[in-house]
View 1 (cartoon, helix red, strand yellow):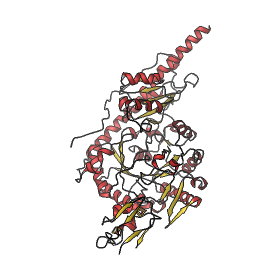
View 2 (cartoon, helix red, strand yellow; view 1 turned 30 degrees about the vertical axis):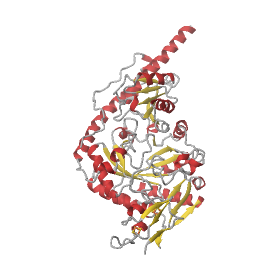
View 3 (cartoon, rainbow over the protein chains, first blue to last red; view 1 turned 45 degrees about the vertical axis):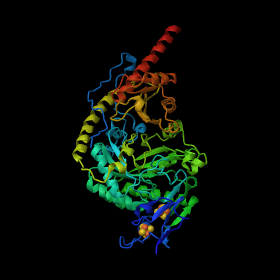
View 4 (tube, rainbow over the protein chains, first blue to last red; view 1 turned 135 degrees about the vertical axis):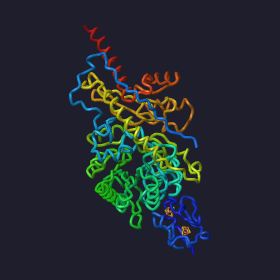
Length: 63
Length: 513
Ligand code: SF4
Ligand code: SF4
């Protein structure tokens, strides 16, 4: 399982990128995207997905 | 590590302003003659008297904050840590690739930091600059849209550097949710960017906002933002936190509306209002930039500021600094303190040096105030027919003195002097115009453009060629007052100016008779 960014709502602010413990988030064009192979859902590191907490636009959800 | 302290000239000789030989220029001072200039023109500090027009508890909060006190900005340094990338609104003058344009210089990108890195950076700056008095968070997005990073950073800084003040800037949308936390963290200065108090105007400024799990656009978005901003402002004031309101002057959109904004925010208790010019460039890729909307000229900016002059505390020394700015206002050492240079180790803090520095400033301030008070008396009581206002630009790198070589100046502090005293008007930057070319010739042209309408420039030193070139352009460069206090120099220049006017008058009278 992994999380995913809804590109239509992403503001491209990059807040999620720096909070991801798995370095799974990268800029893609004007917005950000999560690499599903790298996303661990923060398991073992945090109780909740860090990117979801960081996002000001509520655009990250379970894939 | 080599110690590097921003040199403030610690000359403490008192410069007593010589009394003019011309008796008509020397009216007897009224017994209640007040030093310093009218609060109206000087923002949070009366030119140099500072404390006189503020309640003591407020003065205590602002006196060492370079952004809240015009006087403090000569002595104290601030730094911004760019820990807050997230943002919840889209302004038409912003493009996410660059820092938030509400509070920082448009078109620059700051190095983003984690809270831990931010603390290391504060330690590195504090170790080199005892002038450091404030750490702020102004982006690169919105400090409160990104409240997790912001508050975590503040938490750590306040524990390690209890003597350093904290401040933050926000667009206000998330503000009502965080007032208690802001108060508990002892953040005693907050800047809210309020560009409008009318959603019909706001809809031309904001593309959308993200609020309550949903994106809102148009007038609805502007209405919500407006209501949240005002609620936040009101509650901050209730909590005893000083609020500065920033407004971006956008010609054709809110230029005639800013008087209403000013009235409204003052009504809610804002401490200071700062009108910032829109800086717009198609290359920044912002909506306004692409639409060809231009920023105001210095004259247009001054006109709006003058309209708001009556009784409003207007901030005129804002430099629209970067979200990772470091140093005295107008100085930018951010490139000296990149994380690469700061390194992995936290340097040891030396709070005693900051304390000693602050004590020195207290003494220096008194000295400067006395010098300024006697300088203020220049032309006192003369009406504008005999003593017309004169604009004087100065080159200063701090300490309220004329202590900068013209060749190093990137900005000029502007003063106006007439029979009612000496007033700080604002800054003229040359580097805004310089971005194209970097040759000496280009720079000189940029300076001439920036100083349009200013007949006198006070510098510590200047080369012969630039001096001649400025003279051709109608700007007289005077270096006789090098290292004097600014007010002393301005007063001397004005005295000479009045004497010259009087001489012309005498000749005319002699001819006529
Ligand atoms: S859920 Fe965690 S691991 Fe996955 S992208 Fe978000 S922050 Fe990274
Ligand atoms: S935090 Fe949200 S809005 Fe910002 S880049 Fe990540 S997904 Fe996009």
